[in-house]
Image 1 (cartoon, helix red, strand yellow):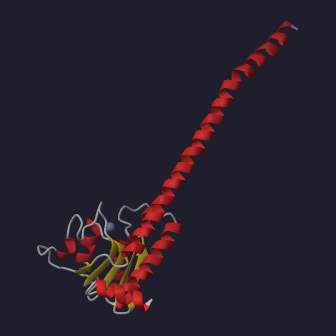
Image 2 (cartoon, rainbow, N blue to C red):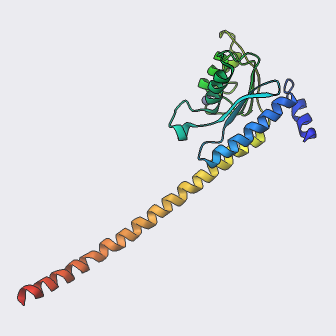
Image 3 (spheres, rainbow, N blue to C red):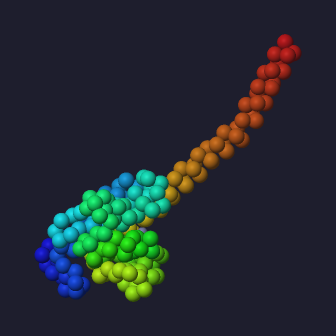
Length: 205
Ligand SMILES: [Zn+2]
């Protein structure tokens, strides 16, 4: 463990043991979110060694388009500190924040943002945009990407792999049900003709 911490730290100047530990905590949280059917992304907000708030995605559960882990954690941190400025706080998040969350990090005046996997579809810290470092904004966060990224990427990959397999199973079940229904439908004219002939028999009797 200490070796892996040291390796990560040397690979990311400015990333300390606390940042790596908080990322590990976020990864565990993300993993449990996957079991509840949420995309496994989680965020931990901390000051020094102290965890201020932590959250995983709640988008499915709350049917909330803004239910990204970062937003949920930032709101919770503000409530806990009784202060919208999260000064001196850092956030570790398993996936590169999107424009909404990177914007929230700037608005919360977070001092440091540490993230794991980069997001080619929505990443707003280096991939598509660079919101936390944009000098046109009135605050900038110190930022470090790629921390424990392999674990963060694997978590997402495994989740989507399982979801695709589930969708395939559901499709196959629907197809089987449709086929069974078809068999019943083609069998039914015989039933009705049998009914007709028995009706005819009743009528002639
Ligand atoms: Zn987001």
